[in-house]
Every structure is written in structure tokens, then in C-alpha cells.
Image 1 (tube, rainbow, N blue to C red):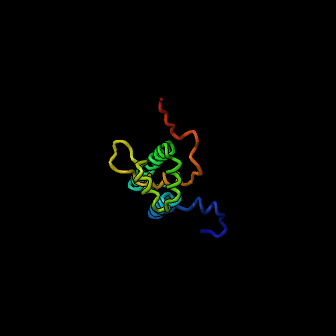
Image 2 (tube, rainbow, N blue to C red):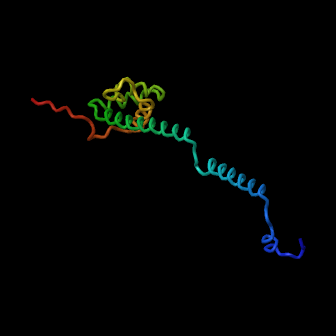
Image 3 (cartoon, rainbow, N blue to C red):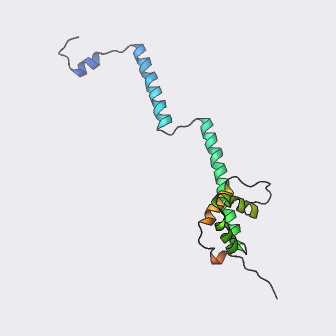
Length: 141
């Protein structure tokens, strides 16, 4: 090789071996996988399945918690129950909600995990019960 050749001339002359090509491709594949799984957001099938199960459980708890809040605030004694809930310590509020039956869905034997906690947190964050949501006793005379 002559020392006075330019870089482009040396590149044109260079012929890599099959071994060098093989290891270059292997290195590129490994680097792509590392970047894909760490920063690219790729997941395995097992991880995706677990994520789907967790999302389904959380979605069900959110739905039941929304229904629980609706049942709670539409009850005729909602203001008294809200006051009792706020007097209850934070770690016992989910028991208060479960014991009241607000997280119970028709046709289910067990409460949905996490729903009572979500419901209690949402209700505890309320200052007052909305006026138009309280059930009215319609008794005919």
C-alpha cells in the first residue's frame, strides 16, 4: 500500500474478509436488540401478556370505583356517609366502602381488588355531595 493514497482510494481497494463481514453483522444485530429492548420499547410476549393482564385488572377496578362513587353519592344518606367516611382513618376507608356494599356488583361474589381503595380516595377528595345527585324520596300522599 502506498502512503500517498487518499482515504477514498484506500476504501475502494479494501476488501474485507467473510469473517469480518460475519462479525460485523452479528455486532449490528446485537446492538439493535440492546437498543430496541432498552430504549426502543420492545417487549417479549410474556411481558406483553403480563402488561395486558395488569391493565385489565386496573381498568376493571376503575370501572367499579366509578360505579361505587355513583352509588355512594346517589344514596339518600350520602351526606352522612361522606362525613363518616372522612372521619374514618385512611387505612380503614376501603373497609368502610366494602362493608357499605357500594363496590359490590350484581352477580359477583367478591369485591373487585383495588376498587374500594379507589372509590374511598375519590370520595374523600370530595368536599360535598353534588346537590343534583342525591336521591329524592318520592312518596305519594
